[in-house]
Image 1 (spheres, rainbow, N blue to C red):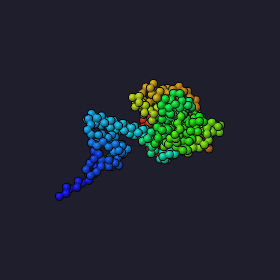
Image 2: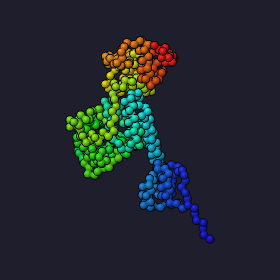
Image 3: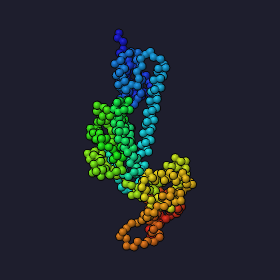
Image 4: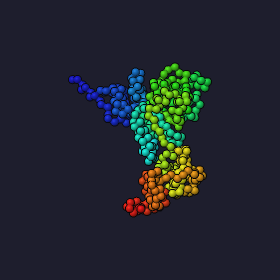
Length: 426
């Protein structure tokens, strides 16, 4: 009588991390079990063990993604060390994933504070550009307008979000160092090149490379970068082998690239390669409606960072902030808010607490209703008050509590005022 044929052993639907998988199993091969595990969960950490020393099987297992391959008999200390390394790798994965999720939240497009129509249009274009996988993006704008923040928002909203985002400021490095940082080098490429170094392009493979102040790049580096954009290949300094990379490039500059192209300081062909999706961030002086909302958002952030309890701005302080030209844009606003919150008493920030350059600014106050065709520029005090209330509400995103604080009135008074019929307001 024949012995019953053993039933094929199906791999379980769930696999515990670190569970040993034998290579020789009844009805199914351990390599096939590994293949099925990786098919169900490519991130699973699988440790293989076998009583048979088969080099080809071990190599195949490692190619399929096994974490390690143990040959019996082995010491428990070896198994313990291997499991410890596996758990350390899993912990690192969790930290990386948490870091990416935190960055996604921090640089989410929805967190960008703006009520300016031009800025909202820029954000909408950036969202659409982020959804593409390879489109090159050129961010233009004055220093301090937030070009780096927009670049990070694009990366973390893109299909490349889980891959590296590497950044390089082209204005901070001399030409030779910029080239070696970007492309890497082989041993002997120059005097101090004792061993191979991977450049940012290699390390950003699969992700995004953000090159800030690209207008400062030398002609030789421009030529090499053009090859990367055209062929997705480059060579390390001193190398003879072309390296293929999959990188999205985001460039930024505060310079007028068209002008420096005309002056012969920037390659025209590179400019057109970079200018696939241009995004211009308007300066803060052209976004007056954003100044108070940004200031309040920064105050909220610094309350947490500095362990403070500031509430808002008095009307006089708000007026000074809005009429100041902000040559350093959002970066300058952030510095002013931080400095003021360190030195001023908690509560509402008054005009006297603001830095001297803000208080002594002699720029004219913005008009509340600029209409050059208005027949009678003289209005009643009540009309002027109504216009200013609406302006403050718009600046605070219709947050009536913040608006009342800036206006220096109780929120109930503001609500009562807003509920009046138009005829009653005249």
